[in-house]
Length: 239
Image (cartoon, rainbow, N blue to C red; front, side, top):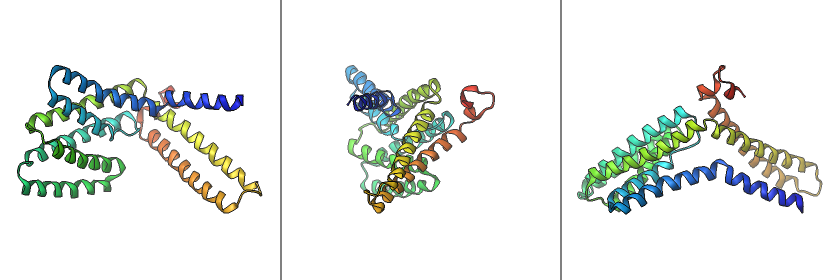
């Protein structure tokens, strides 16, 4: 009973100190703070634009090193700003709007050819189209600027956090990999239990094996693409 209680406390502690909770808290604050601030000032258009911009661009922020995060930020800001401005300009012209949306949907869907991150930026750009059509901003240029400010605001906070704790994502990925490996080994150990059907156990092992491979791939990506961490002169990175 005591051991089970310790496990529960450990799980709760890990949740609140882990990357997922801190990322969720960061995203919530970066979205809510500008909304409250500009609503307080009476500028609803700025509150909506900056809040939506920060919210949508946060979904492109995947675990990565500082250089790749900065590159993702630039690409996301460029795509979001272009999409917002272009779609908002043709909202009052149904034919042009249909043509623009069709072209953007086709073009952004093709971005998945260049990998998961670029594909995600394309997908979120399509969602930006939907938001712009739904909000129908009366001043397209201003709204595009507010969306851009929201994206800059979010990634500024994200990059500052990355520079303060450069190995946060890597440490979290290693920990999750160890946890997944432990579950995988426990599942394999059950193969020696004659009371457990082998077919059912093999299906579980395959799922866990895929999960472990995904964690290994994330660690390799975080390590091999981070020149600072792999620098022989960086003692923290070598550890």
